[in-house]
Image (cartoon, rainbow, N blue to C red; front, side, top):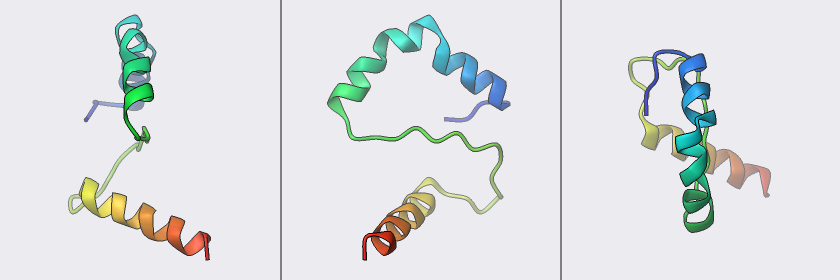
Length: 61
């Protein structure tokens, strides 16, 4: 998902509409919500997820 700025993302997250459905996501999916202020032009979600997995794996050894 993309928002024009952090304030818009936080407004969405805290909205009554999203808060009403948040338990469905939280109770039925393994997921994390990460707010990032900006990314480079070569950023991909898959690449970021792999970096997180690598960091978690390295930390557990």
